[in-house]
Amino acid sequence: MQTLYQFLKPKGYVRARLQTLETNHYVVNVTLNGTTGRFILDTGASMTCVSIDLVDHFRLNAKPSEEKASSASSNELDTEVAHHNALIIGPWRSKRRSVVLFDLQAVNIALQKQDIEAVDGIIGADILKTSKAVIDYTNDWLYLK
Image (cartoon, rainbow, N blue to C red; front, side, top):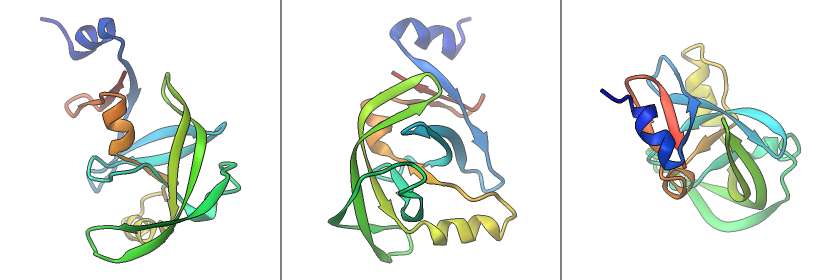
């Protein structure tokens, strides 16, 4: 019987290891503009996001955006957007990726209350769709094409 990796690799997929948090969220290491960070994998997030206080850390050229960020809490937050960023997840690479910036403080406070290290951002459906992502929940792998 073929493993998922054996099935997907000939189709051009690469994989990245996922870490499961105590909250059952997945975290993946991401390199954004040459700097590594911890990002939650969120299939319900429409866009990939970075904490707005990390603009300089990830060397982002951010501009104000008229879009508002919202979450399950229904709070709307002001956003900025940064275009043309180099993003790497495992061996998968994207050179001209846009990211949305907003205040991730509420997310990190919730994680901190459970003694979980803060995250720098969120990988959203924009990347998951364009990379034809497959999540292997049994073995904690993210496959991207």
